[in-house]
Length: 392
Image (cartoon, rainbow, N blue to C red; front, side, top):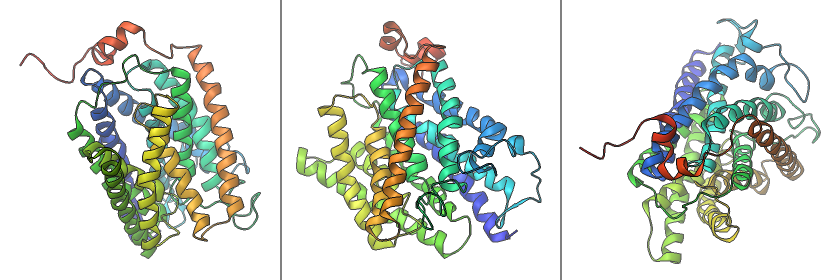
C-alpha cells in the first residue's frame, strides 16, 4: 500500500460523490419547473443510495471480479474475501471499491435528466437498479476490469483507451437517456424555462470541482499523471464554457448563464476519456470544439428531431463522451480500430439492454405518471412536499 496514493483516492472518492450529491441534483433541479425540483432531488438521492447497496451486493463483482472477458462473476459479491489489508495495486481494495462505487452512482443518475417531470418514481428505482447491474457493470468490466475491449482483447495489444469514462459512463448514460426520452414521449408543456438558473450554476460549479476527483482520481495514484489529468480537465471545461457562450452570442445575439455552464459540462464530459492521454494544448482544442459541437447536438435533438431529452443528456454527455473518445485516436494516443469498435459495441449493447429493460420494467410499474400528476407537478403529487413555500 502507498500512503500518498491512498490519501489522494480517499479525497477523489469524496469529490466524485460530491458530483452527484449535491452537484448533479442542483444542476438538474434548477433546470426544471419549481413544482418538480424536489422530485429531481429525490430521484438523484434515491439512486445514490440504491446504487451503493447494489454495488456492494453484486455490481463491483460483475465489473471487477475475476470471471472471464465478458462477466466478472460473483466471486467478490458482498466484498467476499476482501479485508482492510487486501490490495488493488497500491490501494486498499476496499478503497478502490468505494471509488468505483461513486462512478456506479453518477452514471444512472445522469440519465435522470432525460425523463424529469413525467416519470414514475417506482420505474426510476427499478430501471436504474437493473440498468446499473446489467449494462453499466458489464461495460465497466469490458473496459476497466480486464475484459475483451481492454489490452490483449479483441483489438490486440492496444485495447480501448477510456481513462475516466467517456465510453463506460457518458456514452452508456447518454444513449440510455436518448432511448428513454424517445420511448417516454415529450412533456405536455415543453416551453417552461428553468425555474432557477442560479441553482443550475451552483450545481455546475460543484460538478466542475468534483470532476477533478473523477478524472484525476482515475490515475489511481498521487503522481504527475493525476496532476496532468486534473490540469487538462480544467482547461477543457474553461474552453468549452467560452466557446459555448461565444457560439450563443453569434447565433442569438446574447450569451446565457445556463448556456455557459452547460458548455462547462460539455467540456468536462469530452475530456473525460482523454484526460490521461493528452496534454494542455489538446485539451484546449477538445474543449473549444466540444462547446460548439454539443450545442449543435442540443439543437439537432431538441428542435430538429423533436425529441424531449429534457435536460440534454445525450447531446451533452453522450455526444461529449463519444467525441472525446474519438479524439484519443485523432491525437495518436489510441488505436482507431479500438476506439471506434468499442464505441460501436458498447453503443449497440447499451441500446439493446436499455430498450429491453424499459419494456420489462414498464410491465411491472408505470413508466409515466398520469396527466393530472404531470400538470400539478411531481413534488406534491408523488412525494407530498413542496420545494418552496409560496404563502410566506
